[in-house]
Length: 89
Image (cartoon, rainbow, N blue to C red):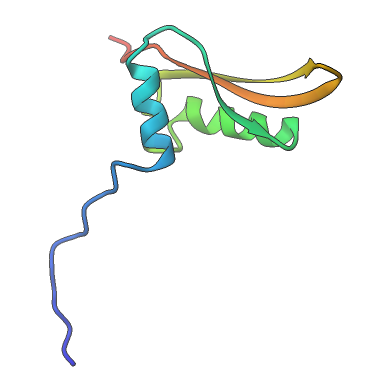
C-alpha cells in the first residue's frame, strides 16, 4: 500500500454549529435558544465560545450570546441564547 497525497480536506459546512449559525443569520437581531446544558457554567462557556468566535461557525463580532438559568414549571434549565448581529463596520 502506498500513501496518496492530496490537498487539505474540505471543511465540513454541515456541522451542528454551522447549521445553527445559518438559522440565526436568516433572522438577524432575533434571539434564539441554541443550547440547553446541564449547568450554568457549561452554558456560560458555550456563550463565550460563540461571542469570541472560538467556534469557526460564529465569526467574532457577528454573534451575541448569553447564558441564563430559567425556571419553568418548577424545573431549572441552563440555556444559551444567541443572535446574529452581522459584521461590524
